[in-house]
Amino acid sequence: MDQLEGMRLFTRVVETGSFSEAARKLDLEPSSVSRAIAALEDRLRVRLIQRTTRRLNLTEAGQLFYERAAAILQDVEAAHLALTDLEGRPRGTLRVSVPLAFGNMQGLPAVFEFLERYPEMRVDMTFTDHFVDLVQDGQDVAIRVGLMDSSSLMARKLVDNRRVVCASPAYLKRHGTPRTPQDLARHNCLVRNPNTGRGGEWRFTGAGGEESVTVSGTFHSNSAEALRQAALRGLGVICVSTWIVGEDLRSGAFRTVLDGFEARPSAADATIYAVYPHNRHLSPKVRAFIDHLAQAIRKPRAELRRARSNKRASPHPTKGGGKSRRKGD
Image 1 (cartoon, rainbow, N blue to C red):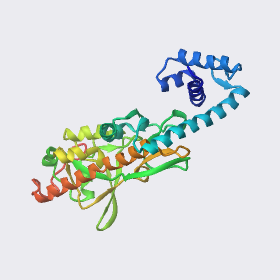
Image 2 (cartoon, rainbow, N blue to C red):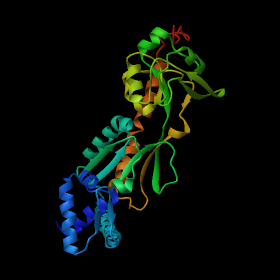
Image 3 (cartoon, rainbow, N blue to C red):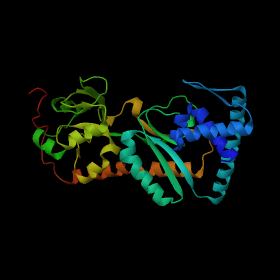
Image 4 (cartoon, rainbow, N blue to C red):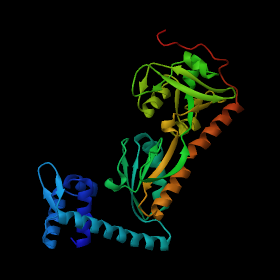
C-alpha cells in the first residue's frame, strides 16, 4: 500500500473514530485497516494512534500528521477535479445519502437514469432517515426534507414539498367525495402522526383564506409509504407529498379531492433540499447529479396536473359529499 493510500485510510479512521467503522465505509475488513495503519506507523517510525479497548486517541504526532494529511488529500482531490472540469464530464464515485421513502420512490429512479446518462459514474447510495455528518461519513450529497439549520452545509432548494389529498376510486364510491376541508371530519383519514394516536390537523388554503380541520381514522403511521399502501386498499383518505403518489395519480389508482384547495405542509417539511459540504469544490459529478435530481423530482408535479386535468374533463361518479362512515360507527 502506497503512502497516499495510507493517508486516506488514516484520515478515515480519525474521522469515523474507529477501525471497524472506517472499514465499513471503505468496504474492507477491520483487520486490513488495522494492519495498514500499523504499516504506516512503521514507515513513519512514530505512533499515530493510542489504542484502548473503548476509543482511539491521537498522539501529538498523530494530530499533526492528520492535519497535514487531510490538507494534502484535499489538494489531490482538487487536482483531480481540475482535470475533470477541463474534460467537462462527470466521472468517479458519488456518495449520496437519502431519506428512506424519498430514496425508494424518487431517488432510485433518478439515480438509475443518472447512471445511464453518465456511464463513467459510480453511485454509492445510503438510505437513512437520520441526519448524517457529510464530512465525517464521506458523503458528497444528502437530500433533506424540511427546514435547514444554520450548519456549515451548502444547500440548494430542489422543489417545494407540495401535498395532495387523495383516495382510491373504490373508497370514494363507497363513502362519497369531500368537497370542502370540513367534509374530511366525516371521513376515515389515514394520518401521519408519529407522536400520538389521536389524529392530526390538516391545513388548507383556498379562495376564502386559510382553514384547518382535525382529522382521524382507523390507521396512523409515521411512514408515508404505509399510509399510501393503506389508501391503495381503499381504507381511507390521505394527505401526502405529490412525489409519493404521482405515479398512482397517473395510473388512476388514486383520485385527488379538494382540488380547489391547497394542502399546506408544516414548516418542518415544506421544502426539499440537496446539501453538500461548503468546503468541498462543487465538482462536475455533484453539480450534474443535483441538476439531474432537480429535474427528475418535478415529474410528479406534471403527473398531478395531468391527473387533475383529466378528472375535470370527465364527470365525477359521485355527487355531493356523500354519506361517510364515522369512526366508531
